[in-house]
Image (tube, rainbow, N blue to C red):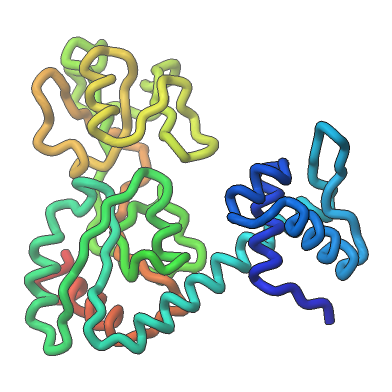
Length: 281
């Protein structure tokens, strides 16, 4: 069985990211000759070249590409395991909840109040994230639970419970051709400019990149684009904008999610509170 130490994986990942031995050595705070020697030792142990090197250029081989992908996951898993082990042993640990700003559909106060009634309740630290990385917080252990929106967030590997379901609306400038409609269909929005969300690959957006709902609403106000979002994310509706229900858009679900391998009482207690009579809806 071929074994690599986590330190060796860290060395490899640094070179794979930088594609430059000197920059990687600076990043790792080690001497370049020592780093080069470590990489050669890894290649010898694996029996495959990981990099194509020249005097001016470094690039990954197919074997290097594969090791970078799986090696990064391995390092993240080790880091998460260490964090979770330390947290499991710490009786004073806080519970960390991640969500997007305003992304609680008005439920968070009730959930926190219900959780405070639990005999084992801990302090809840609230973390805010960008549009794309809330699930990363849960997978790598930076957060214990999160409020996510389905079907937009990737729930693979996460346990989850639906707290709230709501319609999606088109957010339009008040002077838009569809602003006076009682409802629209997705086909009515064909040809409209939609946002590209920062850090979110794919999607149908062709307009400017936005990082959050605040930026999106500003761009809609100045007629640069429109948006389609869960209604709760845009209430109260800012002046100059209107929300029109999109009748054939799948409903949005606010879900409470956590790592499916996390069975700590800390998490179970919060989930029970969120689903309680005063927490969920």
